[in-house]
Length: 397
Image (cartoon, rainbow, N blue to C red; front, side, top):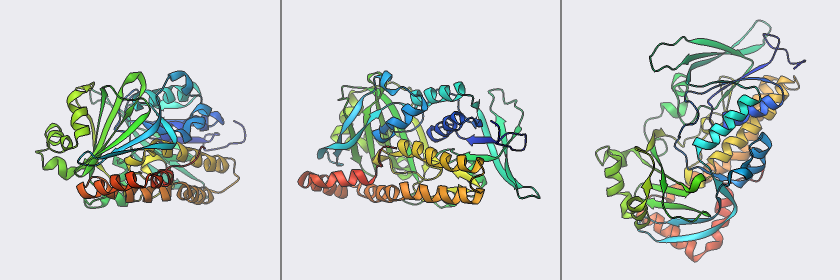
């Protein structure tokens, strides 16, 4: 594109992390004619720990990227069920609702769209560092140090130069540790030492319902995805696993089965994975939105508690907010400093309240007494549920 002059005569955007935020940003940038490189350590398709429920606030945005959601015959979800540790439950209609789709499917579809639109995609490639430097004229750019991953172990590291860098590398990465980001350096506490476990299962279950089932020191979400499968994904403390000999199966039988809803699911469902997909050291602590001049998006910028069901939409919306500012910067309509400040401001306006509300609600989950009080209160005063749900979600963007 003429008029966008960078080091090599063209403005280049580099995106580290090819999850929802990174892929959506890449497609938006490619649509505007920018040269884009995207680095992802996995290959598509792949399974990731995720509740796989997307709020309908994202539907028009995804359609606008070129993803024909209507053709996928996805389950539409408009009902919420919540159960306490001992199995007391309530149900409530979702104000906006959502739809179910696996990360295995949606990430691959978005990656295909990105490549078709000209994005240079480096899969099975680990980014070891992102360095920002300025020349004597004050012009800054990034050097991406990358390593292709190979089964044989033989690989050649390479560098990639970019004018703008986006950090969408997920909940916790080697770069977080390299940069000594505050949340990664914290000692284990009640906000930063969770584990997530995910299965795909087949079991009779209504298409329109997402459930949140409490158990001691955790909760489990379940909802339908494509092909009549269900996603079963739970969050609990690392201590819960440790107390059960670090055995996931033992923990499920000793802890999760105490909730009759979960016992019924685990004993009657057909499990489609030979082993669950798992992740550890999940943190809900606040994170920096811009670090070393890299704009963070998705879970790298801040992770909403899974019970809110809004993480996937937040990642996509953040990519839109970030690209709007990057586009202005690359058109030389704002400075880099203004781009960073405006992105931080827009991000906080959209997401800060959702994150803090999510942390408060999560404090009521996973306890025998608190989950019973929550469910009993919602059964007595169902009108309270709608504002709570709305406080953790946005509007159509």
